[in-house]
Length: 409
Image 1 (cartoon, rainbow, N blue to C red):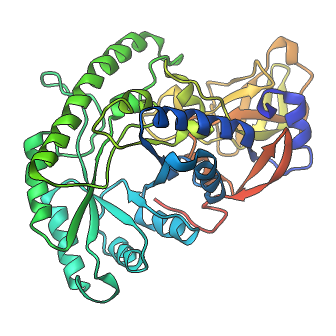
Image 2: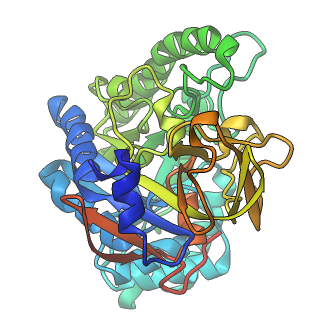
Image 3: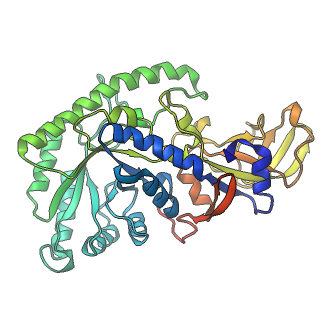
C-alpha cells in the first residue's frame, strides 16, 4: 500500500504544491469490494452516499468496481444532484427535505429531462407544498408530466423512556405517524411514493471503540446492541403497513458504513447506504465491526521549527462537523509519533506538532507531514483536485466539486 510508507509518500509529493490530498485507488477498490460483498451476501443493493466522496470521477469508479449491486447515489442537496446528473449519474435520492423554490425548479428540470430523482419528505406540510408546486408546473402535461418521486424519512432514533438517543431528523416517529404521512402522499396525484428511508444515526454514526473517549465505549456498545433490535422492529412495521395497504415502492433504504452489517440482515430493507467507508477517514476506524483500510490522506509542509521539540506546518485546520470533540480533528500519522499541540490545535494558517525524541532534527522546512481527515467528504471542500495513486505511483488527478466550480451547502 502507498499510504503506509513515509519515504515513498514523501517522494510522490516532492514536486507537488502543498497542502495536497491523495487517494490510493487500490485501497479504495478493496474497500468498495468489501462493503459491496456485505450487501451482496444478503441480496441488497448498495447506494453510495455522494457527500462522503464529493469527487465525480471517484464516484464513477466506486460504482464501476462495485458492479451490479451498486444502485444510484444518495445526495445531500438538489443542487448537488444536478451536478451529478450532468456527470452521467442517475437514480438520485436527495436525503434531506427541501421546499425551496430554486431546488424545486431544478427538480422539475431534472425530472423533465428523464433523470430518476427522488426528494425526501417527513411532514404533511412538505407534501402539500411539493404537490402544489408540481401542479403549478403542469403535472400531467409537457415535460414535467411525470409525478414527483418522494421518499418518506422514518425516524429511527431510540427512545427508552423519556430519553432521545439518535439524530434530530424526522418527526415521523411511529407507524401511525407514517400512516398519516402516507395518506397525505397518496391523496396527491402529483406525487409518487417511491421509497422509504430509515437511517439509524445512533448506530451508523457512533464509533464504539473511540480512543478519544474510551470510558464511553461500553455504554455506546450497549446502546447500539439494544437499538439494533428497536430499529429492525420499526422498519418491519413500516414494511408490513405498506404490504397491507398494497403499496409497492422501488426501494427501502437503511444504514450507513457503521451499521451496514446489521441493516443488511433485515429482510424488508432492499438497499443499504455507505459512503465514508470507501475512503475510510479516521472516525470510521473506531467501530468494532470495521474492516476497511485508509485510502485517503493529506500532506502539509513543514514551514517552521520554533523549538527543538516542535515543527510547524502550513495550514491544516480541516476540522470535521458535529460536536466539537477531539476526534473531529485530523490525526498526523506519518512520520509516526507526531502529535498535535493542544494549545493551538489545527489552524487555518499553521499547525504546530510535537516531535518525539527519535524524530528531532529529521524534519526540516519543506518536508511533508501526512494526516488523515476525520470525515471523508468534508475535506474535499478544501481542495480543487485529488492526487490519485495506483500500484504505488501517481496515475492522475480528479476534480472535486470545488475544483469543478461548485460549493454546496
